[in-house]
Amino acid sequence: MSFTSYLTYFLAGYTGLVVAFYMLSAVVPKAAFAARALAAYISLMICAIYGAIASIVLRILGRQQIAQWTTARAFKYVMALTTGITFEVEDPNKYLETVRPAVFIGNHQTELDVLMLGWMFPKHCSVTAKKNLKSVPFLGWYMSLSGTVFIDRKSSKNARDAMSGAVEEIQRRKQSVYMFPEGTRSYAKEPGLLPFKKGAFHLAVQAGVPIVPVVAANYSHILHVKSLVFNGGKIPLKVLDPIPTAGLTAEDVDELTRSTRELMLQEIIALTQKVRNQPIAIPVGSATYRDMARVIVLLGRYSH
Image (cartoon, rainbow, N blue to C red; front, top):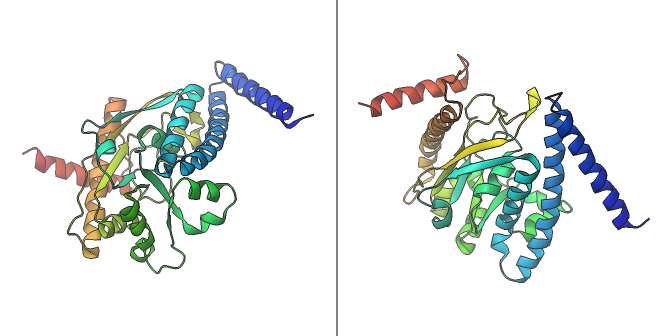
């Protein structure tokens, strides 16, 4: 039996399994989690293959800088079709199109944030990755071909030193980057942010480029892994005003990190309240609660 035949049987069986779980979800709601998880996985695989091919072609054509943009857009359309999940991007000033180069940052909730990038990823932008991932078969090759900005953390003593190579890439190629300053997924049930790492802010300050925060409302009603919730729906996404870094130094990074996190938290809470159309319950005593209290105080000052 040929490879094409094996592939055809695999795709047919996989599709049948996804459809079966979707049908079962009408009786057993939790089956929707399995259906969308399987649909999302195969969508990612298809787009990864497309991305590798597109990266090679675009590199030959001298258009390497849009490789990750075109791959992200493919994932956007495929996932909308297979899972029914979309993002609604609010960018009235078109910062995604006009601000370049920049360090774009966002809140990191779940694996679904890869789809979020599909909806908002700017042209001439790339993600960042550890330099040692270059040697990983397939993944590292795709990253190199598509123009990923690599950060050499292993041979650096601190976040500031680790960003030096990335600074050169941004300045030389006028390449924007997208980073998650939380450093890991929060899987938060309620709107909040983990503590920020300072790498993205050191990078922006050293490169002399603006920081552009992009925030998504808490979407635990769409995906919450612990509760086996995975639904279709629309998630609001807001692009905030660029934060200039011209004239700032390493000594300003702490305050820049703190104020940016506070601003993003405020916007995440506002977006989530708009989606839910109801007050948000924040656990008393948690870091999120303390952040919320600080924001309430600030909002009270601004309102007078």
